Image (tube, rainbow, N blue to C red):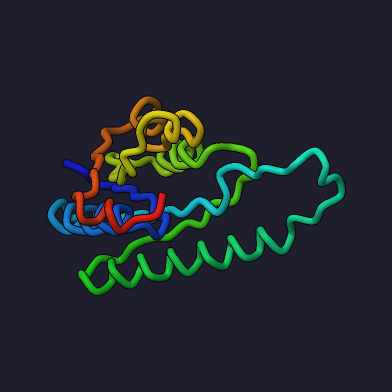
Amino acid sequence: MYKRILVPVDGSPISRLALEEAVKLTKDQQASLRIVHVVNDWLMVSPDAAGASTGPAIAAWRAAGQSILDEADTVARRAGVDAQSVLVEEIGEPAGAQIIRQATQWPADLIVCGTHGRRGIRRLLMGSDAEYIVRHSPAPVLLLHSPPEVEANSPG
């Protein structure tokens, strides 16, 4: 029986599918739902950019993240689920590590997560947050892979 379900959201179609599945499970299990959005998983700055201000970019990422959380809250509320939303801001660490930290601190009984299905060089360069979550999770992980029609319309 799952009592605490955590779902990371990033605004992508597969993230939306994971949220919808987490909402269904939350209702079925009469559980608590925590929705997490990571503002910035890695901040890349060129060595030539000494003294560059990242403040405006971070503020924009924060606003976009809050918008994603607001939309996720609306999805949960419309389904009759009262969710807790968390906006995580921790620069310099992958999103997967931050999600695991949230799952450990809360503590979650289940993580519901979408996978973008990256392969080859893109996975090597970008990493896989879903893979990181599976390898380091303190709880079971339910991964959702997007149907081909969603992948075809999704950037990245």
